[in-house]
Amino acid sequence: MYKVKVYVTLRESVLDPQGKAVMSSLHKMGQSEVEDVRIGKYLELTLQKGDYDLDERIVNMCSKLLSNPVIEDYRYEVEEVVAQ
Amino acid sequence: MKFAVIVFPGSNCDTDMYHAVKDELGADVEYVWHDATDLNQFDGILLPGGFSYGDYLRSGAIAQFSNVMTEVVKAAREGKPVLGVCNGFQILLETGLLPGAMRRNESLKFICQPEELVVENATTIFTSQYEKGEAISVPVAHGEGNYYCDDETLEELKANNQIVFTYANNPNGSVENIAGITNKEGNVLGMMPHPERAVDELLGSKDGLKLFQSIVKSWREHYVAAT
Image (tube, rainbow over all chains, first blue to last red; front, side):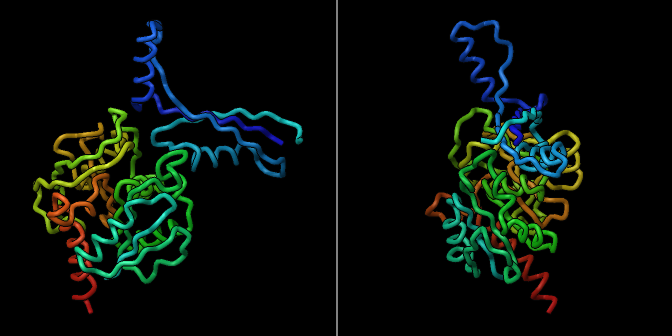
């Protein structure tokens, strides 16, 4: 089995109002060293091993559903795990 | 002319849309469930607002893979009028029938209030009953209506006259005050404001009714006059 960890974030060029609100809250906590906060999503997929191109499948899922390429970027990590 | 109101799990403006078409416009209309696989009998497709599939992942993201959306894409390619309001607009963006994407409102607040819109293009099949530059009052109700597209797409939208409605007082941070756009061909309109909630003076405005009347008028001119 594979465990795929997908990170989806707003593109650099896209304003993140949630991140801004969190940053100003951190500043109010006294954490004045915080320069920027970007909020994203984290997804964990468990995939069966098989006769397929793993990267191609993951890219397909990420670009067509898990992220919206107009406003979001993604990256992923693959970990091999033993089926339980 | 017969309309379909597409109903997804989580749609909640479907009844308003149905009422607007049936009772205020006086046209034929039917609810169509999201797993339908045939829209051939319909002349116009309406995607109502709400929170399809709980807005999971992103607004409209899950709906794009429902059975009925394959048929909506087909209807759009055939040139049938397709109107997406609010969540319906978000679904059209996610499906790729319209360019761009929606972000959270700049204020992070869910905004529910009447908005003044400016009719930027009165030559579409959705707006022929309005005057260019006309100010109309139509309510908005959304948390993610902050329209975004890159500069290149924006230039294209302008060059092709695809920006149909803008906000007089931008409530959500949308690029260029955009409230509604069409596809290049002009038969698919997506808008965040709710014209179906502005079809009777009792509701505070009937400025939205002309949008539906425009669709019927263009359909009649195209199909009835031809036969």
